[in-house]
Every structure is written in structure tokens, then in C-alpha cells.
Length: 457
Image (cartoon, rainbow, N blue to C red; front, side, top):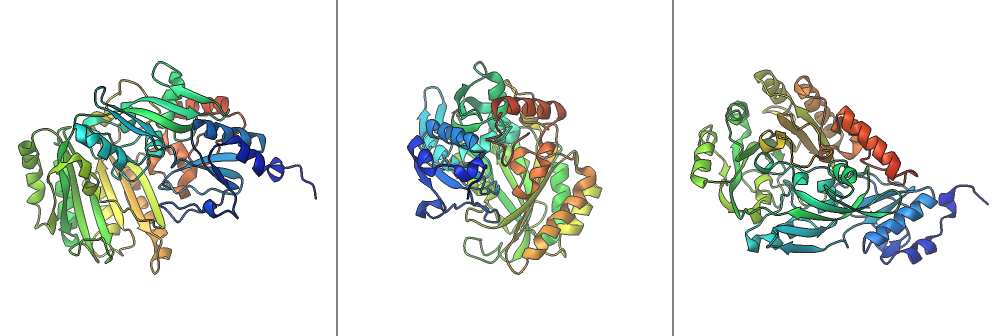
């Protein structure tokens, strides 16, 4: 039987000859894809463990010639499903991590995890600007702009990128900085995979070795008071102070502190830089709200920053929702507590409010495609699609989103779009940014080789 579809005539041996890394078809042992969000399905035409930017370029050219798409993959936190029309480029082998204390920079491969960078920079008293989970990869995080525990103090992580190496949809390896290919540099920071696949970056490292941080956990019965006091408290915080609040329903399982397991709790997270005494004074009103179950806030090495949010690290079938808020008045808190507070079914593992503003809201020295910096808060829910509650998790996320909708801007941040919300990529950008990304995407990816996942087309 003959076919006119290029993909049906694609020569796997030709692909293997074109790259240095290993190429796996579904029948090969190395084909299996393991990622954080196991709710997504990854069944690509082939998996390529790329050894460098030249391998990525070769895969993109092969895909374009055979009517396929190419999807980068490192940790699978984004949970983007990959089908049989795509080649999955596994970037774990792009693992260079070179710290230069003299220039306070780091050269990093796209597949490097942030904790690796943190550990390499810490002996020099320096710190990279990671997100709440240092288990994610450098490339994926920065392509979405990146907000972390110090976002109010230092701004978005993509604001501290000096240069990027990426492969465009034309199969060309390009360098991008504020001066060289500036439009590409603009769009790679915040535009996710629209303009190219990031293979390497050079970032700034900041002279931060310690912070005043951690989390204070309260019983769920205190949720109403904690939320209101926290909201009022955020209105007067200086930019040196960063905070988020999460209503938690943590399971009784290994790795969860016994005092938090199997019950509803409310966690107020804090991260501050500067004078630790002043930071302690700032946190005092939160400590006085109610009797804490657990209080971990205090001086801590930056290398332990993952403990602030204590995001899960083991793979799980996650369902997420997210939006940006313009404000958080009393009516919003009441509506939210109605669906996730005490007495509500514990179908959502995490319901989070994260304070923005400060440096994040200011125009960065070099503009990027990261939008919606005027938002006051992010709202984010995570539920685990596991028996016996799996069938209820999606509805619970929808109810929480509907409850907060009157105060939503109708927008979100690129890194918070879950795999089932790909149609909402439009909400990550304002009209001008969306139009520019679309036009540049058409120019840099004329064959649609990168048209999969979080892209503007």
C-alpha cells in the first residue's frame, strides 16, 4: 500500500544518521517518556535524546520535511500531550552548568534543573532566580517568563537572562540577546515555544546567599480569619517581602509532615531579603492570627528555597486551573471559602493565591513577551486525579475558578497554563504581544514544525 502522507514515508534511519543522540521508536527500550504530570499522554512518532543544538536543528529539519512537529521535553511539568504526529526532543542531555563568579553569570543547558544551578552558585554566595519548584528545567521555565518566591523583589526570572541559544522552526541555530536578534530575544522570554526551542541560556546570578523565609501553617478551621488578615497585610508589604497563601488538603502519605497530613490547613509562605530583624517584624502579624500548627519561617540558605512552597516532586496525575486577579475584596474571599474552605469537599490538593506587584509590575530594562504585569495576584489550583476522588477533581477546579471569576482579569501567565487549557494560550498575552508573536512565529516557523503545545499561531 502506498501513501501520499510524508509522515508515513519518513525514514527513521535517516533521522538516526542526522543526529548524534539516540533515536527511539515505540518498540525501542529508550522510547518510554516519564514526566511529572502523568495525566498527560506522550506517544510521539519518535523520541530523540539530543546531544546539542545541532541535533535539535536536525530534528526540526527532518520534521518539517515529513509533515511533523517537534516538541521539547525535560521534566514534563507542563503536561503537554504529545501525539504520533510529533517528534519529542528530550533535552536532559543539554546539561551544561557553568558558573562564573567574576561576572556573576551562569551558562546553562536547557535541560538543567534549577536545583543543580542553585547548588553550583551557592558556594560563591550567588543565586539564580528559580521558581517555587527548583525541580523544573531551565529552558521550560524561562520560556514562560518565570515567577519565583522573590518575584516582588527582583521581578520575573526572564528579566535576568543575558543571552539565549535557540533553534527556530526553520531549523537554524540562532543566538539572541538584547542587541543580536532582539525580536527573537523578546519572544523567547515569555512566548513559550512559539519562536524556537531553547537549547542554552546565560543568566545573571544575584548576590543572595540567605533569605528570611518559610511557611506558617494553620488549621483549616482558621481559614476565614487567616485569609482576611493575610489580604489586609499584603496591602502594606514593601517590595523586599514576598508572600503567597495556600489552602491545602494534603494526603496522609510518606513525605507529608504528620501534623499536616489528612487534614485541611492554610499555609502562609514568606520570602524576604535584607534585614532579617525587619523581616521578622513584618511576619509578626501573621504569627499572631491564630495558633500555628507548624512555623518554619526564619533565616535560611537560598539553597533551601524549595522548602518555602514545598511543591511535590514525585510524578502525579495533576489537574490545574489558573487565572490572574485584579483585586481580592471581602466578597472574593467569601466566595472562595465557600468552595475550598472548611466544610467544602477536599478535592483540590492546593488552592493558592500569590501576591504580585513590586518589581514584577515595573518595566524591565529589556522588554519581553511576558505580559499582565499589572495583575495583583495569581490564583492557582491543583488537584490529583487519583481514586477515589479523581472524577470530582475537575469539577472542583471549575467551581473554584467560577467562584473567583468576578475578580479575574480573564488572563493568566504562560507557565500556569495546564495541558487541558491549551486553547487558553490567548489569555497569556495582550493584543499587541499576541499579534507580534503570531507574526514572528509565521516568519520563523513557516512549515509549522513547532506548532504543538504552548505556541501562538
